[in-house]
Image (cartoon, rainbow, N blue to C red; front, side, top):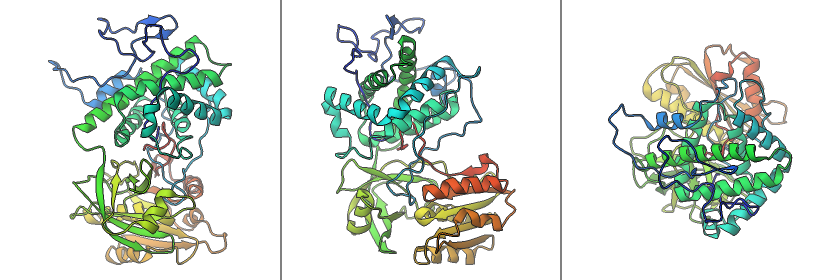
Length: 482
């Protein structure tokens, strides 16, 4: 679901009733008691629609409250870490995922909801044949709904596995309503830039169920089918409502002109762009970027500075092998070129309500959001201790060290520690063990996926609680939060 994830009925009898209706067709008149009407083994009247706002005489609910009420009151699972809506790459902002897709272990314990048990069983069965499931899904979608093909990138290589990753995250957090709602709302807002409309979601839902039913023959039955219909309908409605609310506040994308392009190394460039209208974001967040040379292909890049008074935005981009967007931005973009930006996203932001110190690990271009957060703290004038470990494979790869050292010189509370791994012997996460203690610090990580994994392990090893370790990852409902 990184690009619009929309689906219709599968070619296995999932097209609905003979009268032309389908599983996700809206009821023309809702039943007075709000109960779901049953048609045989299928749930009728479940198509998500963009509902008009109706006047209310009672207390007004926020969109978040309304969304949480729509999701069944499943048992929360606070032990499961929330998914962070971002897809950051090998170098921060590259075109690879931070985490590999994985099949969640089905939780069949007494606290799991019945639908959660059924859905996780399905996901466990289709996990080993994930490639076949996704290929069949897109084949169904594009054959039965060829008009939707234009919403997706021309090359589907990077897109194919995103649906499965999204489902894995949803299945893993289906019982954790607050986490799931926040995640889905972010997805709904992000999907606006693809041109996704409410009427696209039924197509996705039916093709999705058609694909799952084909490749989960052991666990699939009428009860499982009903659980998936209920879950998908609720999920899509939360996304639709979030998109509708966001439409009242901001555009689906921003145009931004390149006003500066500085090549720092042979494959790393620092770009500064001027958006065509105000672009609100927080230090540590990122945006999806589309270039004019590769339409409908979006990649995530973190903002490399805190919000500026002149409204300019900066990104650090590393050109990676076969990276369409990254190579275009590094080697092809020139002053005056115009790119498109999706809405800001990401959870790796500074908590300004606390005086905890900041322990930051930035590898490669992952130093960009770290620098932005340090600037944010400095601008607020609060002297919070901050330790920045800046990792690279060579001195040359410390392309932004001068900027960080200038920040250190003007802020006594900041310490910058370059870590150069010349011979593959000194890993960035290992360096933090030489310093500390870190009991009073919040930790932030950004960089290659291996660094993220080992960094989390190292931080836990030195006593930093998991709930104080922050990073943007790709475990998403739609592998990209994009």
